[in-house]
Length: 281
Image 1 (cartoon, rainbow, N blue to C red):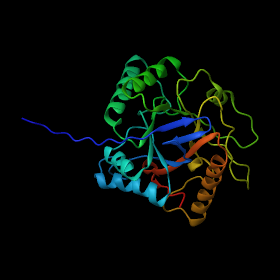
Image 2: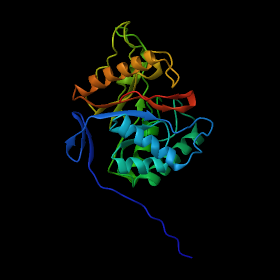
Image 3: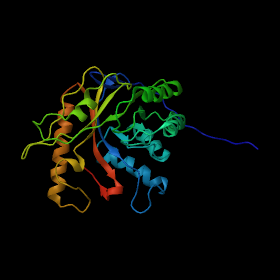
């Protein structure tokens, strides 16, 4: 019996540098949002058209150039749509704020291997998340995860979102989060930071000064942690306007400074919390 499998591929050059992100040799400001693919009541059990529609919203309604698949590999239908639309993708291994023991770590290595093997044909993917979201620096473990990605696909950079914090502007960094921000050595090619610097009353948010020894990307900002305490489809117009203004402020900061490769705000789709955030038109 014969079996046929068709796989689409594409070719492009994607490079993160300390002076920005370059696609086919041209600097592109990464303007994006995070995305969950869980839907109300149905979880991930949705038809392909729903996942494809999310990609269309990000590209055509929210004007994004990039999406972060937070915090797990997502539907191949979504990735196919990103390929077709030219929407750049950060895909990352499943995990959040936890590093387990020997068995758990073995499963993480397995997950990294499976992610890269499944999705390395997608030209929209420009960076692999081989350091789990908001986990502490672990040179031994993340050297292994980066090595797997490099062995299976030597064409893409690696990254992982470093835990941000939630102070008011002017406060000093706590020891825990300052250590996360300045720790060396790092075993990722792009330094990504969840930057939740809470603005002073009546002021717009700003961003932390970027690290400069690596390409620097803001992986989360604003969201429900800055500004209105919650932002849902049923939120009053004033809350939606405030949220859009806050996002515009941080995107403007990132776009005006070449040390930032770009900014990926939180969050376009956060279904588990009952939110569908459409922030930038």
